[in-house]
Image (cartoon, rainbow, N blue to C red):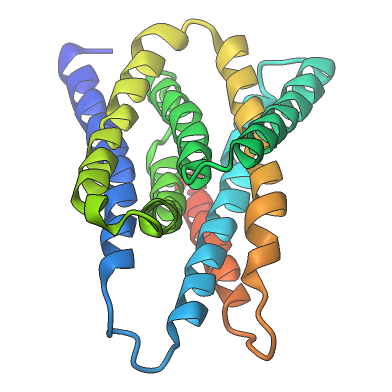
Length: 243
């Protein structure tokens, strides 16, 4: 690979990773807007946004993390990593519930974002396309940022600007983790495969435990279409990258 090609590849990676990270503060900003829902009530909009994130998360698991993760690991290792991710996320969920902290959504968001950014960097180093995974990370970070910001400001509205600044700083974790994946993990495909499967198991657990039960509303049928839309974006990107 020439220096120029490598430089362009790295530039694209950093742009994609940064854009994916900035979706978190973008979701936080969206949650601060009032009065723009002329036809949807606020609660219905929130459920629709959650469904959009759930669709993108499932799409990332089905089309990127699992197919790419299983390429370099054995069946047993794949199963252990996938189940291990689900158990780890469950343990984190139990811990945060016992602590009764207002940062449970924030922790869930970061535990998705960092492994996926590592995978993004490794995918770029191995010559794979990064656009699909980057778009999926962005789509899931938007509603996660939306919900995490609301959770953290519900009892402390005076710190809204500080929390928003925190979300902006957390966006930098995306390019940092992608650089780690690009320069250091690309030589260890078995390790990154395990990380991707671990993240996939954790993400699927989070969708089933935290997101899916909150999407449905009595006498409202539109919010689940957000999940369909989120998955459709991943499907279209997957098909376009395959040519």
